[in-house]
Amino acid sequence: MTLLETLARGAGAIAAYAAVGVVLLIVGFYVIDLAIPGKLSSIIRSERNPNATLLATSALAAVGLIVAASIWSSGGRLTEGLAGTAVFGLVGIVVQTVAMLVFDKVVGISVRDLVKEPELQPGSRLLAVTHVAIGLITAVAVI
Image 1 (cartoon, rainbow, N blue to C red):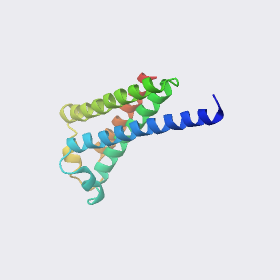
Image 2: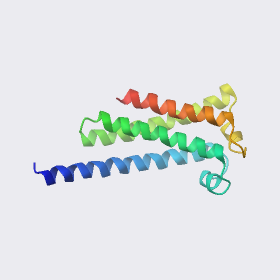
Image 3: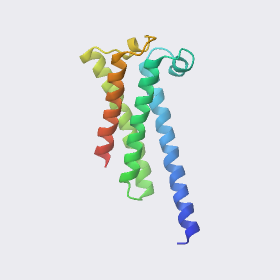
Image 4: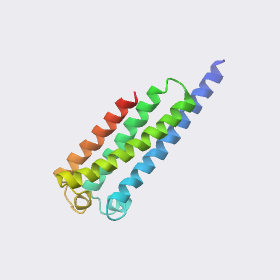
């Protein structure tokens, strides 16, 4: 294989993984959007709500961890890596959503109530760390 072929193959793999990663980030964003009242993009952009922003960014960071771990664990097998990245990313999004619902019921931290608050709340920080922790746990499980 020539250097040009190697570079083209690598660039194609990067583009493919990036596409899967972007799709997973968009799916993760809209899943969070479904879990809160109102339109998440509007709450962040127009209302500049710090709680919604922190919850969304932490969830997306967690998805990024899962995507990165999936790529790492693929061992250069592009097709398997892309499939694993998609599946593990979706599992991570589902687990994060379930964790938010569990915290709401068990601990009494309501995401719906948090995003109505104009000031950053301690519960948002807790859920944000939970998102990242779940992403990290899922990422390590993938590896």
